[in-house]
Image (cartoon, rainbow, N blue to C red; front, side, top):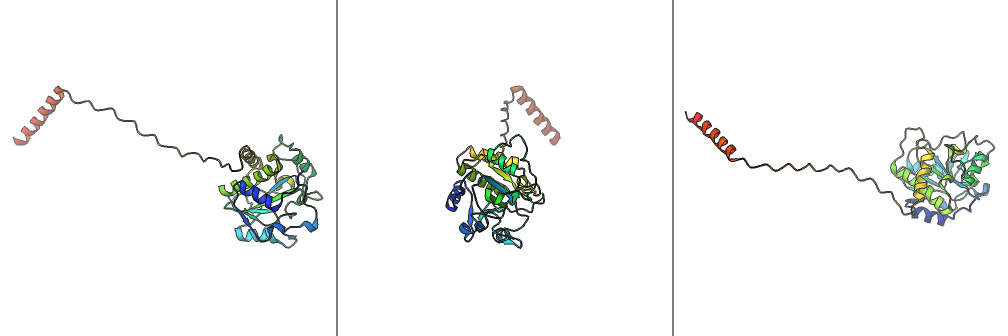
Amino acid sequence: MATPLSAAAVLAALKAEGVRVVEVGNWRTHNRNSKGAWGPLNGSIVHHTVTKGTSSTVATVRDGYSGLPGPLCHGMIAKDGRVHMVGWGRTNHAGGGDPRVLEQVIAESYGTRPTPPTKGNANGTDGNARFYGWECENLGDGKDPWPKAQYDAIVRVQAALCRAHKWAAKSVIGHLEWSSDKIDPRGFAMTALRADVAERLKHPASWSPTPPKPPTTPAPAPKPPTKPPTVEQQIAALDKRVTALEKRTS
């Protein structure tokens, strides 16, 4: 369990990890704290938005919609990799979830299974009090792509939180792992994301993977030097030229 980072602390952690941050309005004090606790925290949940368009998505996750007031997350990770901070404190992102999942996230004990067990969010443990929440701009249809810049930012955000709290990558789960009636994030595997977060945590926060070098075409092998003609070859060539000239003048 951990005390939530302050707004200033999370901003510093994200920037140290190389995240491009956009501060939206009064995000530092925009929250749902009047409706319940926020903390102690045990991990971070990744979501997808089921929306298209960065500006409209930012507005939705900041303000919410009928029946679910905002903020709906702490930050929205856009297609271009920028992270729009929209709230800090309790947010409406996780809802109820399986208490067994929370136990396993706390213990980091679910490594032998592809995902933690889930049973839906009806009357479940209050995830809004226990997790950071990150919405990622994507239609969630399994076809909308996840650009490299966006996925890299997701990894960096989660690594920044884990590094700040000294958590392992298993403190990062998807909404589908928290509640069985959710499918997000759709389009990449959480096991792969956790592996990428774990790899980042092996390096300093400033680390960036070295892109592979493009293959180079080997230079063609030099041709062996041509041997000068022998005297016999020179005489034979001269005879051919003389014969050809005689035929042309006859």
